[in-house]
Length: 128
Image 1 (cartoon, rainbow, N blue to C red):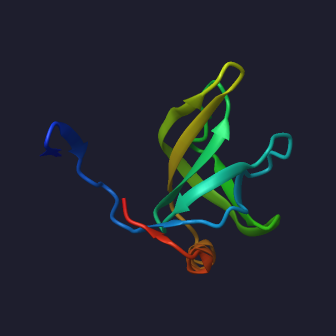
Image 2 (image 1 turned 45 degrees about the vertical axis):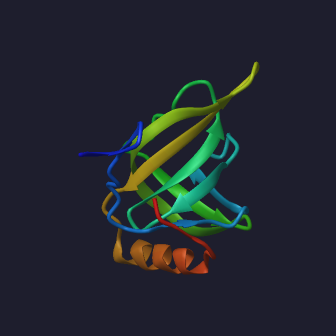
């Protein structure tokens, strides 16, 4: 369903849960993958999160698990994810900056509690 405002057309918001922007030091990485740099988290909800990273090609994360860090300490581990969107965000001559959104798959009760605690630590709410 789309909504038209003036000459611009916007897709209706599909998120059921509010997004919260995160502190600059919130990082994400693929569980068990210690070879690469962590990704910078943009925002998070109980249903998923968005992060940015530098790469020419999109990540293949569906079926993977991701870890969330705050100040280099593991906060929530092994969150199962499915990629919702992965697109180029900014480009320069050498590398592409990408924006990836993932949905959390079935979380354990402990993961869900840890995720709620992480979200409560964040300052600003982002709706949309």
